[in-house]
Amino acid sequence: MFKKSNKTKQFDMFNSPSGLLCDRESRQYDDSTAWHNKFYTEVTARVDESIFKPLYTEGRSDKRDGRPNASISMLVAMCILKEGSGCSDEQLYEQCRYNLLYRRALGMIGLDEQCPSIQTYYVFRRRLCQYEEEKGINLFDKCFKQITKEQVIDYKISGTTVRMDSKLISSNIGWYSRYEVIHATFLKEYSKEEALQVEDQMMREQLLQFLEEDAKRTVYKTDSGSINQRLHTLGVAIDYILTHCRQEEKHLLRRVFSEQYEKDEDTQTVTVREKKLISAKSLQNPHDEDAQYRGKNGKKTKGYSTNITETTDEEDKPNIITDVSIKGAGAADNDFLEDAIKNTAEVTGNKVTAVHADGAYQSEENRKLAADEEQGFEFIANGIQGKPPRFELNLSGDGVLEVTDKNTGEITIAQPVKDGQWKIKTTDKNGNLVWRYFTTEHIEKARTRQEIKSIPYEKRRKRNNVEATIFQYCFHTRNNKTRYRGLFKHTLQAIARCAWINMRRLFLFGLQKQLQIG
Image (cartoon, rainbow, N blue to C red; front, side):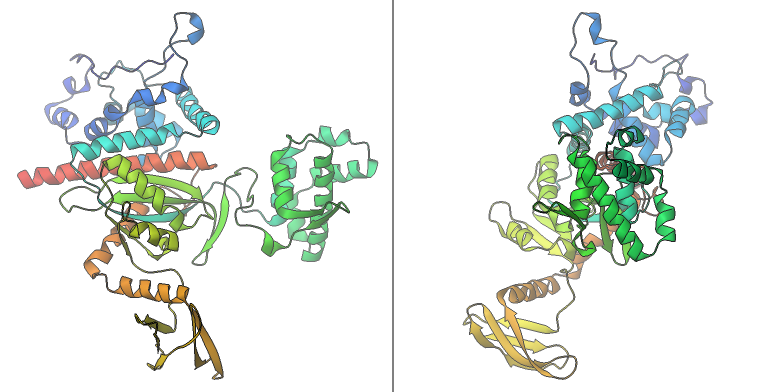
């Protein structure tokens, strides 16, 4: 049964730690600017528990409702404390039960108040996951935005200027080879009992052999040619399983088969798909269905991409994170921009007029969005994706294209070929004369590069500070690898961590203001 917790508690001098401590410790414990009291006022006390009402049964007079829920504000605050300190669940509960500062941060002002049990904490997180899976609604994210909105109002933060950056984060999964991915999925979806019921003796023995196999040892001992043959044999076995079970069964095995194999419907022949044709969004590990692959700057990631947006419009105000978005690692940075701006405007209540980002956020769609009369904004990017070109292009109003070779400094007037296309004669890297063609797309990118160069340095450097936020976000990870699996659990972790970062910024901002007054 859903029931709001009481946030206006009666003070008891006999059970309050401040009444039992010496004067100095008592003053520090009751100091409103101390981190534990700041956490309570900025996080715990701001939680709107009614957001989580759908997780609990409606109140009725009969006993089927069960007893009232534990304090939801405490459970939310505990999730944020856990990611803020980077501790395990057991360490968190030890601190919440016996650390006076943690207890005060959660709103337990008396020594006789009981902390919610660890089972209640797990049930709360499990219900969040189940509700998101069934309804597609992230209640924890709604709560984060509600808390942030109140903070923005109280600290009078406009949020008209924002900056954003993304971070690739690895899931808590092992690095599997192609054969190991398929074999591990086979083991997860198929059992020995099912194999023993197969009527075809040859196929039954083949399936049992695969079930008893150690895929890692097989890959280590086998050459590439033999592995390819074994991949094909395993694919044939999986195809047999899928054709002899109901369509709604073994969805993960069906997914890995469609990603790794091709089947000719006429001849019913199974072939191994070429490696270069396999998408980066394909299954990376059966224990985390949402994780995706991406290589960036020589580093390989199997996991997710986190995009963080924060305010940066006023020097005398704290910068607050307004939006946290998680997608598979294969998602491009420019895919986050539109939603991040929309979500920030909903939190701050003000239209975003300027966005600071790096070149990865540049795209034709985002430039059109920035130029829109109603939703438009100043798009301040530090660059544009791709290697800087050899030629600078300048198209005059009368359609004359002037091409400057940055290697030689030579300026050439391009010859028009047809509408939207020009060419010049130049030399390749071997010194041979060749024709070089330019399209309107090349000219548009050249114009964008020139516009970026013209942006004052003071404006461009504003984006750099968001990297400090990215550093804090992954501070407690090990080599940028979390302890979680699954898109939603990574989203919970990112939101909780960013809620902690916001609290710390407001805490430090309060100390700074106090020093200025003093």
